[in-house]
Image (cartoon, rainbow, N blue to C red; front, side):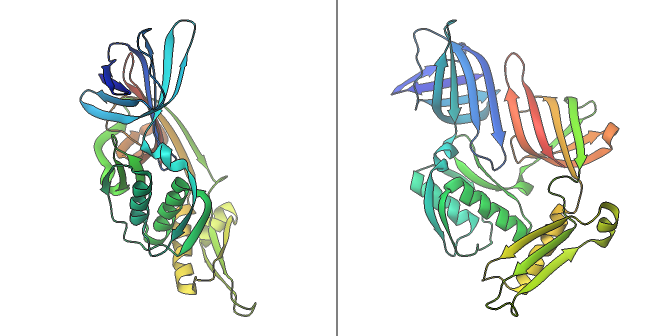
Length: 312
C-alpha cells in the first residue's frame, strides 16, 4: 500500500500510519470518496491537502481533503474527494450544438480540471438553457439524453486525477464473480414497483389543440401479464412525431422489464469501479450474464474486500 499526502508544499508518506481505508465510487452520481484514519500527533492534515492512494501498484485515488476530525484517542479521520467535487457548483449553462463530450470539456476548462480519455458520444443535444443547476446535473442529463436517443451509456468519472468520459462497453473486465469465485454473500430482489413501464406515452404540444398529438409504444403481452403501467412525458416544441416515436420505442425497451437489484460482498479487485462490468454466475437465482457496477465500496484494511451494487 502506498499512501501519500501533500500538506502545503511538503509531501508525507503515511502508509505505515493509516489504520482504516475505504473508497466509494458511484456511477454518474457525484465524486468518488476516500475515507481514512491515522494516528500521529506530529502530522496534521489540513483541508485542501492532496491525497494519493495506490494499492498493489493500482492507482486508486487522487484528490483533495474536505473534512478532518479527531477524537480523544488521538485518531484523525479524513474525508477526501476527487476533482468532480468542484463540479457541484450551480450556474446558468447554455447548450447549443454541444455533445456530452463538448460539455465535459467546457466544464473541465471552467474549473481548470485535468482531463484524460473523453470519448466522443457523437450525439448533438437539443438546444437548452440550464438555469440554477449544477454542472454535474447538467452533464448527467446529457448522458441520459444520449442514452435515450443513441442507446449508448457513458460514465463520467475521475481516474487518478484525470476527468474521463467512458462508454460502458469499453469498461468490460475479464472477470467472473459469483459461485466459488470471489463472492461470499449476496442480496437479490426483483420488482415492478419502481421504474417499470409497459406503455410509453409522449405528448407533442402544437400551436393549437388540433396540432397536438400523442405518440406511444406499448407491449400488449406485458400489459396482460402485469397490468398497464404507463410512463408519460410532455415534449418540448422542437420535437417531431418521428423523433418522439423513436424515443418512445427506446424507453419501452429500457423500462419494460422487471427491475432486478443485486448487491454482492466479495474479495477485493482493484479493477472494479462504478461503470465497469464483469460476468456473474449465481446458480441460486439463475444468474448467468454480464453486469455493470452502479456503486462499489472497497475496504483495504486489514484485508481487501468490496461491496457492490450492480445493474442486471
